[in-house]
Length: 170
Image (cartoon, rainbow, N blue to C red; front, top):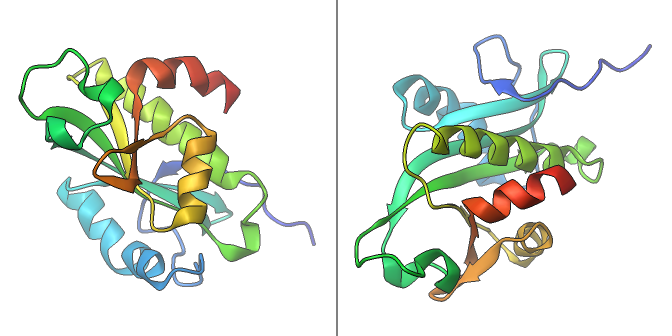
């Protein structure tokens, strides 16, 4: 029997099967199963899922935020007044262990960047911020042009102008 085709990322909905999702990090799994839909419905974060049939095989969550200028990368902070900088937080990005290494993570990152660029047309955004959980995740984001923040090397940022340039290559 053929495996269902992989869907493009879509907003999380009740019809999606979450229970079997396992990315290898219990905190990410728990977020998806217990909190993502509540956060999505309340507007605290938006979660987008890639599926095979109804089974979720990857997801990312986005939320608006701001960072102090002192915690931003030098390029993000350059030329700005001493005020909080508006950012899009890539709050979560994970792929089921059965699908890791297949390019789904890259596709989810591209989707998150495209959605951030769309949001930037409506309201002010300077950059995307991600909090990598460990060095392997940090290396993944650096490969696509994210730069470490001066206060924590696992916090990485990418300017909107860099997103516009790189999105076609992702």
